[in-house]
Image (cartoon, rainbow, N blue to C red):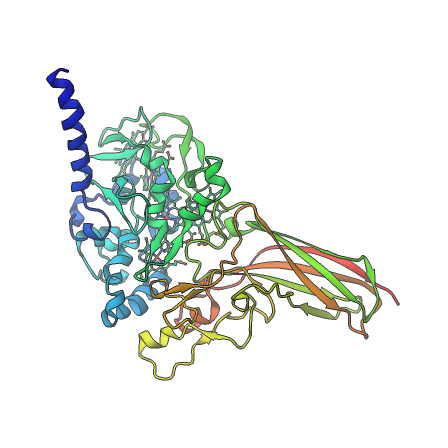
Length: 452
Ligand code: HEC
Ligand code: HEC
Ligand code: HEC
Ligand code: HEC
Ligand code: HEC
């Protein structure tokens, strides 16, 4: 064997591996890269005009400045990290994903968005396009490796730019790339965000459909108009999710049918609603599941115009009570502990969701077993009753028609509602209304005829 072959066999892998391991990722990367090492997204916008304009409208350009993010970090997480040693790591950790530049620069805690520091750049162009890979087997808790500089990480073999070099890196065309921030394990060792893991377990990963295929679909165009190449498949930087009403609308489908077409007052009718997540590559809700509320509301209207609210039949699984709306249940008492509010009773667990409606959720439970929206304070999880991709769920409604019911047609409507944040928590913490107004994401109607 030649000396050169030995060099290639031994030294090259060692050099590559030590290069990877020398690079700090996750918690260890805090304070390793000053702000100046990263370019601002505005600098990229001068050439990449359309991509920049799309990105500015996506949540990832605002994940440090957006009002609810500011409120949760500065009014709950930061004070909690200062008084509870178990969660002290979140003071820096939240920023690993929401303000990566501040985290990497060691600017912890960052100042509020009003101070206009570079933390405000959130997940910038240069953050994503400097990511080279990740450390370990599972992507989570910002365990990406990052090398800012002249070379931008991309996926094409033939891109050429006058101002920067391009590295062809298949990592950017992988779900793991997104998973470095879209999977999160909290200080209690609980997976409190698992969008990538849900995807990996589900039908879309098996079909080879990546996050990028749905959230960055390719379209014909030019990524750097006037300079770049016209291509049939330029990756769009849309990143639509729960903050895009259009993306939410129709993401959950519903159909409802009765077991009989006609019935009489005093008799029992059974309705079945079939609900399915036929569009998302992960659970609905995913990611911030601790704060989203997705529920199914059934209402009947008789021939005289009188309306009746139907309550869901119980299935009897463990923890089911947490998935059926209650007007009296309280939760979120840990907000009182964090804010030092003596005798704080908690807030309405289900906000304004009508009593008896089914809620598709994964309850996050604090160390005392109470529901929480503080994902970092989650010591266990309740039953996972969310909507898995391409799996339908049937909910039944057994309804004894009132003796006094008018004869004629009864119309039954099933409506799927979505709220980004439990309304009681939002009102208490003064989060803007946009974050919690109920959004109607689907509806369907059926009927029965009431005869004497
Ligand atoms: C002076 C114009 C200019 C500026 C400024 C600029 N780029 Fe580019 N960039 C280009 C051109 C031209 C291409 C090649 C486009 C093509 O292949 O069609 C390119 C390609 C890329 C690619 C594509 C890689 C691939 O998959 O082929 C990435 C990623 C990229 N730029 C990121 C950035 C980032 C991030 C910034 C800001 C920090 C930036 N660029 C600033 C001109 C620019
Ligand atoms: C959340 C991470 C993320 C952010 C933020 C981001 N990009 Fe990208 N970008 C990607 C990924 C991933 C790809 C490659 C997708 C693929 O090939 O599957 C990509 C592709 C590109 C391309 C090549 C497009 C093509 O198909 O030819 C350019 C150019 C680019 N990005 C520039 C930018 C600029 C400029 C910004 C900021 C205005 C930006 N990106 C923000 C993740 C990101
Ligand atoms: C550096 C960390 C990071 C990476 C890498 C990353 N994200 Fe995100 N992403 C975030 C954060 C933080 C948010 C939360 C934004 C907010 O505050 O609402 C987010 C939000 C989103 C949203 C939700 C938008 C909404 O409307 O609520 C989508 C969709 C999304 N990301 C898709 C992706 C995809 C697809 C990729 C991979 C191509 C990716 N992200 C990579 C950090 C990241
Ligand atoms: C088959 C298409 C598809 C695939 C694949 C897919 N998504 Fe989604 N995603 C959607 C749809 C549709 C929604 C809107 C419904 C919703 O918000 O749950 C969504 C919503 C989201 C949200 C907001 C969820 C919430 O509850 O706040 C995030 C974040 C997200 N996707 C990230 C990802 C990441 C990361 C991957 C890859 C691991 C991925 N998506 C794969 C279609 C897809
Ligand atoms: C591992 C990365 C990661 C860490 C660490 C992280 N987040 Fe997030 N955060 C995300 C992603 C990704 C989303 C978007 C999830 C989705 O929409 O499905 C998000 C969403 C949010 C949202 C909801 C945004 C909205 O508009 O609905 C808030 C608020 C938030 N995070 C605050 C925090 C706080 C406070 C911490 C620290 C205790 C923290 N995050 C830690 C990645 C992270």
